[in-house]
Image (cartoon, rainbow, N blue to C red; front, side, top):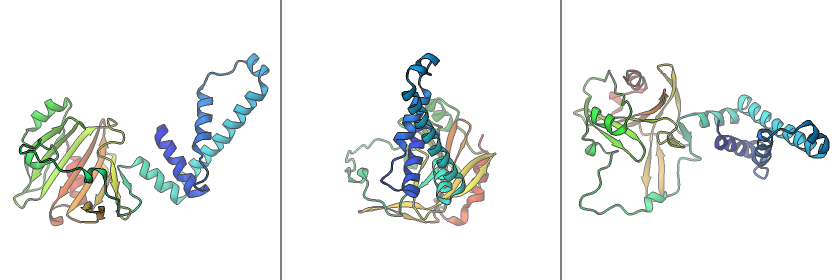
Length: 268
């Protein structure tokens, strides 16, 4: 857990259990800084008993706070949910309705020759070997695909270091496999918010933990609204040095959670 995540924990737990008017982070941060600083020599501590006792007292209080946070996360429903959200690939938004996003207010480009979009299947014209060269890392692909799905193209986004492999059926069902170096983006591009009502299901892929969600944010003039639409399913996990996302768009009769896990488990 990094400093940003620890700050997030203290803030959320303080609001839930103590009250929004109390901020636990400054005391904890001060204690951690003191404990990581240079140690007092014996003669220095003899000369400054008041300061030394103050550091001990502050450290003891902050360690108590930290211990309380750990207990809250381990033994209370709120804490368990918070711990899962911090460690997970999906995070629940405060509600199923978000305000209008800044990027929604940006006018769409009107160029006659727009820049290719690596997230679009229409602009995915490269082969797996070509995006491997562009990315500079091994690009994994499924060894096993459901009947009817064929590879339709790949793309690489240098801005986020994400590769995308696109698969499609004659019925226009589409499957997208995204891959990016884990820890490169903070937070990673393959981690994100889902609606407050979204059901996040835990899965296991080759021994690694993953998460599966059904639904999508649908844009409105007033902002995104979460819809538990069965026509969009998302699976996210981390394997070794990479984060992955498998996104299915299409008839739910052609795809379910178990089949998506099977595809993810076949990467090579």
